Length: 112
Length: 116
Image (cartoon, rainbow over all chains, first blue to last red):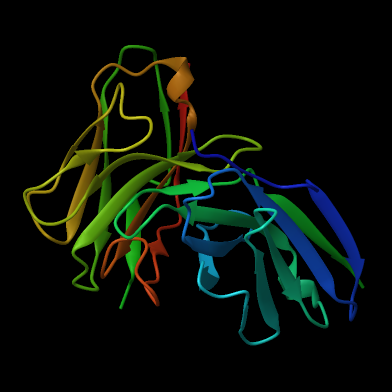
């Protein structure tokens, strides 16, 4: 079956540093990937997405990198701020219209 | 716009009791979803709906029923609650189904359910 997992359950970074959150997926047929941010007591919030025909996509202070060869996805956050502290989930789907499969989440802690 | 709202925010049930969770969205979205989130785990899809009057099973549908009588509302029912259903339940909605570029899924704040 499909699975999405994360290498690091907790990541602690200094304010102002860059953060990298990693995610591995098992299904090579996946063609759509999303990163979500979930703050304590709130629902997940969409951050950025990427299709399998792309290797990189940039947003505001965030970049998603996709390596299809090793089935690896990463989220880079530039100049990490205290407001970035949250749990980050990656999710994948196999073709348009299919269900999303979520990873277990990585907690990002930003030290002032 | 309120976005996606969920009622109630918290609930404690005894084993065997029933309850209904209400999700409402005011964005005129066609698609709505119910997830559960357990400690240390990602979201798992329970049921979803692709439009008014339609429902479909997700990854973990057993023990739950849903209804989408109105486009803006998606109800999740537990007919006979079990301790294994203790979880945080999230509702979400989107304009188009997952897998479409630039499709953002909007999540509600969650309902924390405890079954004793």
